Image 1 (cartoon, rainbow, N blue to C red):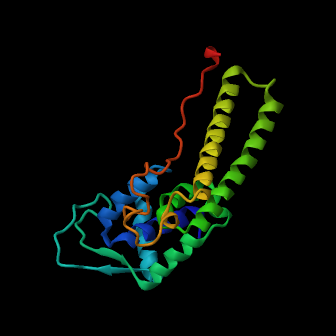
Image 2: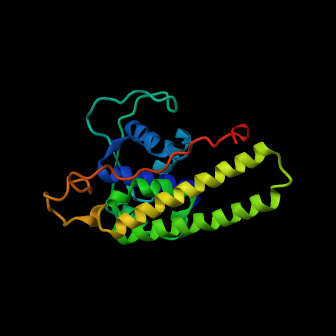
Image 3: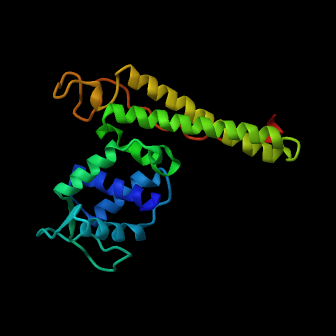
Length: 227
């Protein structure tokens, strides 16, 4: 399975783990989730759904409900509802527990992070530390590249390289903050006692705490003319 299809499978199973959905509703939810990290082609969703059904991870239901709006893809109204089978729930739990190198990469990390509220703390820590290690390796390569090519490029090309370097540095700082928070036992499902309403709002976040940290957004680097 390719990394891209693996990301989509994980996102579909994760969203349906919360509740069954029409294909149309699932498309909207995926657009919000995946659109934050990469372009999402709706043409890949329905083949993915059919594949998950064929593997026994999803079940198609046709309840007696109103049709959902027509889609540009199929040109007709559909009322299929997708829900996880027992095997699908097990598959999602297996994917949640995976903290290997694929989970550290750009292609996977953002979507994995979106489901951290359902992920065990020990797995979250391994993924965060693995991601940080991967980015620190990238930083070393970028710094070495800038040092070697400084005399060969004009100011604007160097500014672009510097901007990319600063973006990675910001993410490393953000990861450091998340890791320290996890170590301090302050966030996520493992941060409170199960079933204790006085410490949790029921969504894996401590009552009265701030929203969980979000990935840093790149800010434009200074242009060469501003230096």
